[in-house]
Length: 262
Image 1 (spheres, helix red, strand yellow):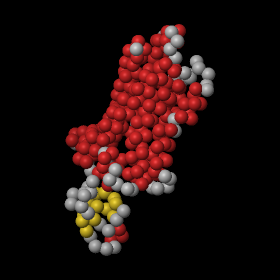
Image 2: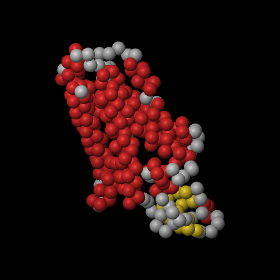
Image 3: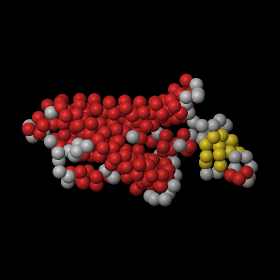
Image 4: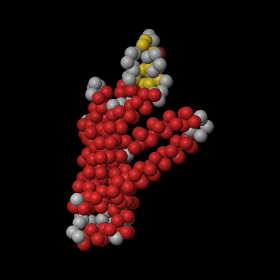
């Protein structure tokens, strides 16, 4: 319990610092993009983009936070003191995994109840469906290649238009590959937060741990986005594409454990 009381707050503080940095980058990018628009448009864009980035990049944030905390402990002498007391990577693993679980559950809750509400208010005027573009205001359907009659589509929801922004409960009512991929991905992201937390702890043993975490975890995040796109287009099985974040970190973690520690 002494280790938990000592290291736990350090991990939480590092997670807050990394999250604040990510939010700052998003605010800067969106402010530049919306510089010629009004304050209301800027606020709506920031509200949506910040929540989306914090949810989708939560595994990467956890890995960076754990690695940053370990780097601070190394520079301050805390890591050497813990090592002399018999506290190493294995003893710190439950704390890092718990931080990942907390961040993963928080991201799941935001994606379930907060992000869909914000996204609905920012739903664009037109959405693309398999039958043609549909106007969200009144459900007017424009047939593909203007063949056929204009009609109305009722019940254009966020889940049908943008499954990645819909709640998990709304996705269960759909049978499309996109919805199935997102269901698997939503659950796998929680596991990925725990795995990436341990990955950040493993890479903290190496020289330049922040660089290793940024490169490896950034590449895994990119591969996750590519796999999600392939699964949404039914190029690969949705369960395989969606579950990739839950197991893709295992091989880099094993490789990191086999490397000599500093």
